[in-house]
Amino acid sequence: MLIEETTGSGQAQRWKLSHMRPMPDRVTALAAAAAAARTYQPEHPKQERQRAVFRTGEDVWTVWVDGAFSDFHFRVSLAQQEFV
Image (cartoon, rainbow, N blue to C red; front, side, top):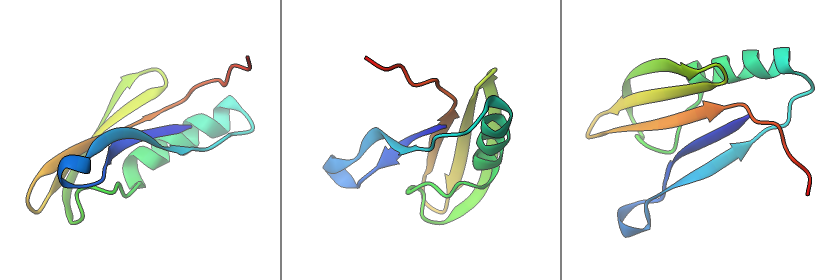
């Protein structure tokens, strides 16, 4: 499971892969990703007021989080690691 989000502040703010969590199987991964979309606390915003979860693909969730001063989004997705 992968989580991408905005991290840092000011000019150092950037979109990055913030979490990678291996899962033992697809069923477990789907459940964990759906739960993360509902409960994961992203770096921004600090004070969450509201959240909307969108399943934007079979293995992808995009989450909009409204904060006290601005709104942000993060993405939860499943991926299979390829070995080179």
